[in-house]
Length: 133
Image (cartoon, rainbow, N blue to C red):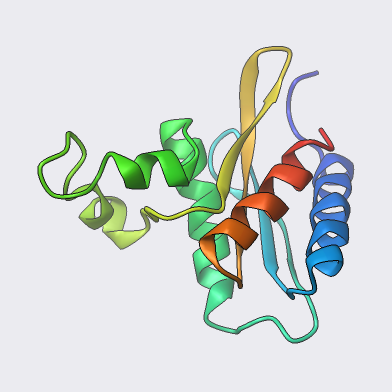
């Protein structure tokens, strides 16, 4: 079965939380399924309230386009092929680091979204979570 389960999401979040604790940055961490629907979300103690929505939308964006949000961001600057994409999907598209697709057996089965630190911090925590799958 390729579908992400709640147990998968919990493992992914635990790995991401561990990395966030290592770097000393509380984070919001979201995992979505293949349809971009939220499976689970954690707001670590001290993580910004405003990052709840951002983490969920980073996960949605990453799954919607099967791309890391940092890569989408690189291609959505003025003059590039995806300029203006952030205004699509009722404004849910996030174009900065922290969203990573989740793959199993070569198939994208969901995504993780992380928000609460710098782009580099969000990305490293998301990558740690993705590595748990």
